[in-house]
Length: 198
Ligand SMILES: [Zn+2]
Image (cartoon, rainbow, N blue to C red; front, side):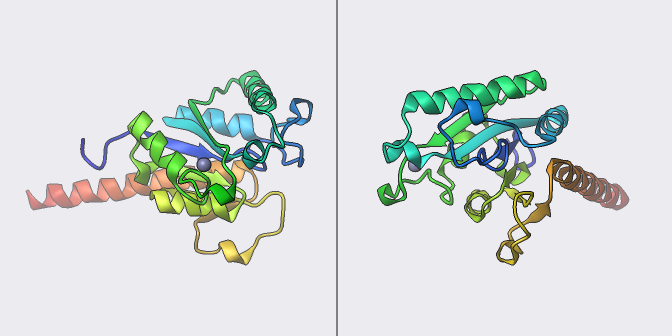
C-alpha cells in the first residue's frame, strides 16, 4: 500500500468535544451533544472519513466511575448521535490513571496508533479534533493534522502552532473542507507538472 492510500479518519475527543463537559462523566442523564456535532459528523462521513472516538476516562482507573456507568454514558451518546443519523466507526477508551504511565492515555498516541492498525488508516490523512492540549499533542505524535475546538473557553495562545483552531463544529467542518481543497489543488498541480514533462 502506498503512502497516499489508506483509509482516513477523524479522531474525536469526547468530553468537551462531542458532548458537553459537565464534570459528571458518569451520569447518562446529563449527556448532551455539542451544537452542530451531528450535522458536521454526517458531512464528514460523506467525505469518506471514519469517525473514531479516543477518550481518556481515568475515573475508572481511580475507582470513581464504574465500567457499567461508563458504558451507559457511551450508549447514551451513541443514541443521541444515531438520532442525528451518525454512527461512530470505532471507540477507544483509556481507563488508566496518569500514574500508571500507559501508552494509551493522551497525550500519548497509543489509541490512535491502535486504531490505525485496526482500520488500516493513513495517519497523515487523518484529523484529530479536541478541546485540550493533550488531545492535540496525541494527534501530533501520531502524525495527524489537528483542530483545536475552542468553543468552551477563550483561545489559549499556548495552543498556537499545534494546528488549526475552530470555534464551533461548523468551523471544524470548514477547516477540513479547506484542507481537502488545498490537497486537491496540490495534486492537480503535481499532475500538471508530470504531464508537462512527458
Ligand atoms: Zn491507558
